[in-house]
Length: 267
Image (cartoon, rainbow, N blue to C red):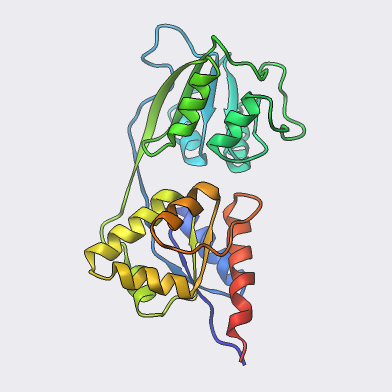
């Protein structure tokens, strides 16, 4: 006999939540959508305030690519680096040439790539993007919650680095029902897709006065984190992470979490 596997998911309340729900349902789980992020565009564009165009533009998310494409921005003569296959695919769909995708889909992965310590994704043109970015103008375009690892690493490599905040990530009003469910032992699993989703989940739990109970509930469930930075954030707050997929994609995360959780639902 089996019972439902209730999996909380915290993706933004747009097509990503719809896709997450569909995926979890296809895996036989019962989705508990509780968006912890909302996107507020700033209208800023890479290089708009600079006297000289950047030599390299780094994009870190599909959302950033979509906002830039909607604004009619193009990389021009700049080499384009994208963190993660979804970001790269969105850039290609916009008609841009992607020059570099690090094998590890994180800020630290790109830094390692630039230091020549990691292998590049196959079939990605790299002639215009040598490992040495010293003395090059590098523009990082991302959300307001980007890691300092990327900026610091590029600076240490000798690049002249600037940052464009394309959008702000805020917690939607009314979010947090999943924290009440976790506190009551009503969640079987949870999928955290960024450090900010962890922090916003806990902030929502604080508002409801159930923070410690919610953490305890998560630690009785199966918790997945999309990458090592997210796992570290969860661990710093006392949340045990059971699953970190090899590939930092939501599909890989959800699949691994359901596979880990499913055996506990057989009686």
